[in-house]
Length: 227
Image (tube, rainbow, N blue to C red; front, side, top):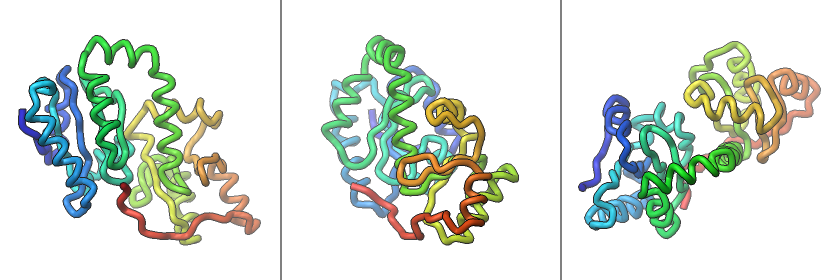
């Protein structure tokens, strides 16, 4: 079946609730790397082996809330889903790995078995991936533009005052990450700030380090694509 572009959240929610395997490419039209993935999608979609797979494209910047929900901070990112459940993901241009994963999850029976036996390992891998998406990662309620609690608003103000180069993840958009990260890092509250993949702490620690002059964070730079 042809590749489908989903332009609204309602289209995405309606389209991806079925039990077919969905392979979703979060892209931007200006990134050459994304064009490679789109070409691969078109080729696979015309192959009989993948006739029951839905290949879907989503413009990451146009549906920013959806990108945040699925932890998409750079393009291209491909997410594999079935019945509204994320099975796996591939970041960057990795056609061979992507095809292998599609084949792995193409059978509902196989994917259910894998999801059951490896769900905790997959979550840990995803958390590690999110934590290392940027040298400085802030897990918070809301995002840097619209913090949704006073603690998150305060820590964002501190980071901005230091001209810090950081990315955010909205835990309100993904309860699996919200609960999983508490156990993974043994830290029960939010916000949580990670530097170079390691937990620095919550608001109290960040405030204390900032006031003492010990808070050293990476400065802003612009890195928007990956290969």
